[in-house]
Length: 133
Image: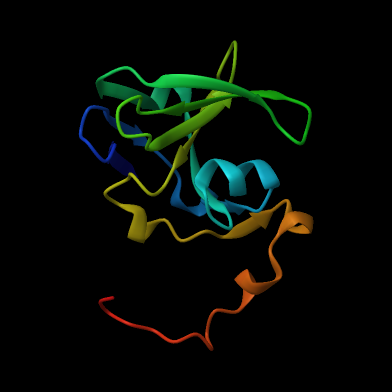
C-alpha cells in the first residue's frame, strides 16, 4: 500500500510502500514519553520503499529499552515524529502512523512491550465520548 506523510507544519513530506498488516502498537516507556501519550502506532517501510520528498528531519538518538540505539526522526520546526530506525544502517523505517494520510487504514494487528502498557488503555469503551470539546 502506498502511504503519504506530512508533518504538522508541512515542512517534511514523504511517501512509502508499506504492508498494512504490519501496523503495530508499542507500549514501551520510550514510546510513551516520545509521543506524550499512552503508546505509539507504527508501520514498517523497507529503506528502499521510503522517500523523503521535501525537508530534512532532525534526528535524536535514543538507546531503547531493548538496548539498541535508535534514530528518532522528527520535524525540527513543529516536532511531529516521523520514524524510528537503526542509527547507522537502516534497513527499514518504522513510520509513525499519525502523520500519514492513510492512518485510518492502518489498524494495528499486534501490540508489543505490553508489560509497560498503562492499565486503562485496553478498554476505553466505558468513557464519555464527545464529537467536539
